[in-house]
Length: 465
Image (cartoon, rainbow, N blue to C red; front, side, top):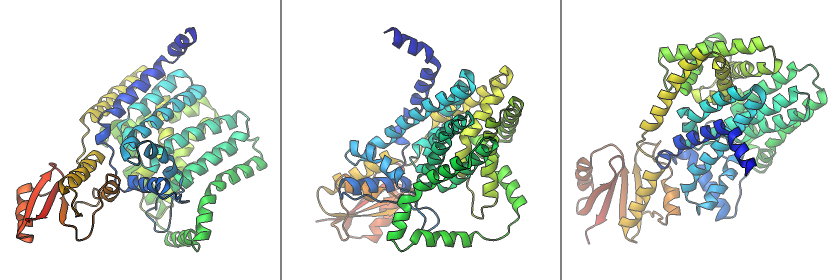
């Protein structure tokens, strides 16, 4: 009993942050899970695993045709799908649990490196930022980049303490993230190795083993490539050829800073890219970097190096660079901001006042037009309305919202059939009255009804007899 009391007294700040994180995340959780393409892919993998007893060596396809993630992200979700009999209901709660684990690990690592005050500030930013909550609720592979970054940070810290084996562990973690969660994490991997080189006593053998530990993560993709006529290698060659050329790198660098990075960071911290919040973000980052320079610890250079390597990497990348590509640098941003405000009460007060208000307000006001619960209810509506008769389903809703339905129909016991007795058409924008009139003209002599939801309209078309 005394041990438990000591534990709670010692970890009161962490326990409070955990409770706050859970409260913000569990609020509206069932209406925030989207179940679109990114969520349907692991659901289908779980179905193949549990029903068809098949397991794939690749994961989700990427935007560049012929590229795939590794399988780990899909395999992880076998756990919630197994618990919920292949229904997605457990998935958002599973991600919430992982988020709390990441929060605790982040707090512990930052406390070990910087002390309790910095750990409280940094973990609070991660716990409260609505953007962090949104990444989690999105349930896609990018979410795991933060947890990977915590592992990378701990390993590099241990390496700078003279424990060489942690360079190997860190490289392996970087490989897991790059292969299975997002290939762009290669820039964070480069930042990890570049910073490691700053330690003068590094050994060539250690770096060689670390490189091997990174590359071993590609083994499942190598097997898949060999089995499928070098599809991955040929796609890689095509990608290299497509990204050759000599663009204006300086203009690209300025564009990324001005239009992508700063606004992304400002939105992560203050839910806005308003000029005032952008200036606040720049000021706090500047102060944090100044503090790092003043401390004169080579290990701490990892944080600005991390952001700069990713920034320069995308400067030389010919393709489109969306803001979420910089999600991999958020751990560095949080630490830099924490270092900027931890010793100056005025800076702390300015930051925390804006940060708490906008992020908690955003969490309370959050709303979405469509989500998993809507899709689940829509599927059950169709199954119930068809009353055991055969049916088919057409989707006249935006592409971003029309995915997931085939899987849900299969899981909840309704399989559409071409030429089924009843027809259901999912619409999104038109009012119910105009939809009913339109489809009565298209299907004269049939019974047309419009129902279900204020956002998603389900038009049912049935034979009169």
